[in-house]
Image (cartoon, rainbow, N blue to C red; front, side, top):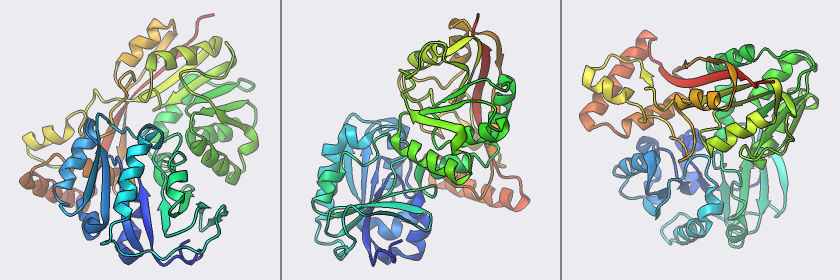
Length: 429
């Protein structure tokens, strides 16, 4: 893409470094600088070569901030900007919530005389296109600044683009290769889909029934439903993120399924649907990220009497299972709940209280089934999990952990399993 736009080097900015890991390794000279906004974890090993041209913007609260501080201790040359009294969850609208502070930190950092120069881009502003599976939008003129997706942030970079494009040629990227879309699509090809299919089986969807997914993301479950139902059901996907909905439509169009799915904007706390609008409603790993009481009452409200509701949430009250031959003390440490993952919003639900909450809303015939999903070597997700574990280990523990990974990978027995709480119930008639 850079070659097509005649850009020899550029400044880059994004949520984490995973999207650039291969590019950093192969073409470090093309990265004039890198800014990371509230990353969940840092990978000091891959970032070391860019440390002198690295800015890390981080909150001061939450597990992500603690992991980042641990990683920064190995990157003393990196510049740091701290957002006070801020967590920066993966679903936070970072640019809208703290855009002023982030913009000021980026402008100051990018103006540093010690950074390698990035030649002004010749790409015309307001240009949009797609190259090699990467969608892009150009705004402004000046040195190129490539903006990678900001995880699940609803507004992405939009609030910051006017200020950044006044001095830089901003190139905003999208597509299924980056960020949360890549992660969601990878999960859709993993063992996680066994959990989804078990949920769909328990919901027992009949031909002609309408089905709503709250927080449809990149549309993985919607496409699974479209293939399952073969056009016999009305399928409705709602999400609060215009960015994710745009990518969901593109992926469904590519799969030839867009005509079977109604994608549209909608917040889980206030669904834009009337009472009893659908026969079946479901949601997967969304109710951790907002006000669970409102979300649960809303998904029940829009389901007709006699209809079914199905929910999956992360289980942060259950440990991950890290399948490694470790001594008992280290094994207990790496398996401890909360070591891996991004947590939950203050009013979210990511524990066994899901079952009690659904019962309190009157759902009958509840089927409650916690599930474990194994994540295997070779996936971006297991690499991220390992980085989160390493962030809390001492040097000696790190060495023991890495040795155990080597042994287990050689034997073909290494995996990390994540727990989920799952439930299906019927709305009383």
